[in-house]
Length: 237
Ligand SMILES: [Zn+2]
Image (tube, rainbow, N blue to C red; front, side):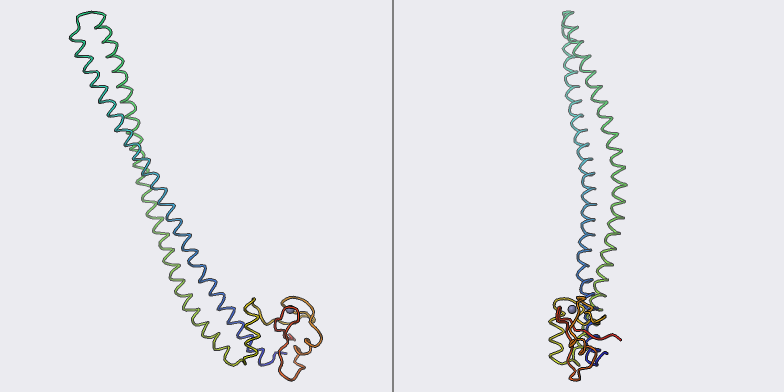
């Protein structure tokens, strides 16, 4: 039998559970926001890698251009020298150098073309990745905004339930509240039904005295507490 006091304790417990549930949800929000922010950071890091790769290619292109420039200078010198030599063997030796330098320049120009092609491809990919990044970040930021809104409404709800919880405390006497609070500090539920003489919390058998109190046979309005776990027990008919 549920005594009027126990009925009030059960109301308190129900509001306490709702209050705690909301507190857990509020606590989870910043953790979720953190995860989304980590996603944004890793997307930005990925685009930075692509940007650096493109820069490296530009540097490589400049180096090849410098090499081509100096090879062309050398080629010019050889050609001038060749026009000035009189001996046939010297002329031929320079002709050999000229052919070698021209081959080297042609090779470098081939490399330059490859790098330029890679730069064009890289730019296209980078532009596409940037568009995708912006979309993803917008999505993530939308999620963060939603989470913040959720936090605001959870806090409002918590405030309401907290007030209800406080209101549920006022009709209870100090001893009952102390019993409740001591047990609630460990865990909920504080108040559990008896099943076959066993506590609904720890599932151990309570004494016949406690069972009798829980059945409402004691007239002094005393609350029945499980001897094993301390939860308040009541008889569920
Ligand atoms: Zn128990």
